[in-house]
Length: 277
Image 1: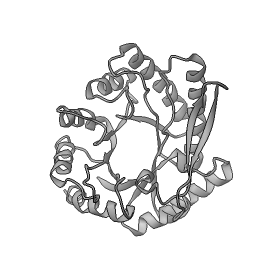
Image 2: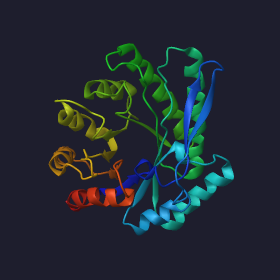
Image 3: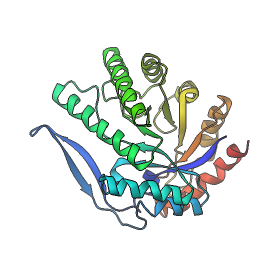
Image 4: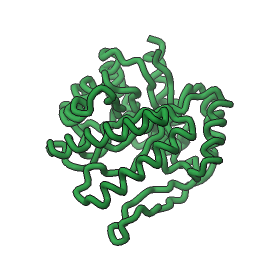
């Protein structure tokens, strides 16, 4: 049965500092760049707040975790349980497993494993891993990514966490490259389809291609300057996934001006009829 979810990116002006992971080429290490934002809800408060607003699940971006210490991750898990909410996916926004720099590729794989462990301790069902930043036409990179995703999937299964990817960043920026990757990955392949990440004339065909292997769809509308979604365009995306038999999480994405909860409410009104169907 389909259900309503949100990504913490849709509240990135409400959840305190963003802790971006960056690769430092000079030192060969991962650094953290902190971007200050207001703290209106802590991550521990968010599950109950989302539940009160009619959501059944949340996807949490890795840069919204103020700590990855085991005690804190246990508190996150408990916060979701207490609110009766599903922590569907930990969205790891950093990592290039197709990097041409062997040192970075090795470091990024180790970093991803650490976040798989964090996903397990915090109760996340899945972790979204970036497939890579190589061009979508690079067949060698696609094969490398598939092999490394399969390796990470095997590790995730030992910890009870499913590894998935998304049409996010260059390698999976087209439907063709996404499907080639998922096919080579094999039986454990799964993805997220983000409405805003496919571009051009083939957008709706590409959404239809990847939907059958999608555990969630990121409902990312096109907005005007006032944050009002283009309803006709959004419904075309929603009709496409409905026609493909999608029956998972509809994750609302809002990045427009004004109050972010209100922005998501405008999207929710459009999505609600698809949840009931």
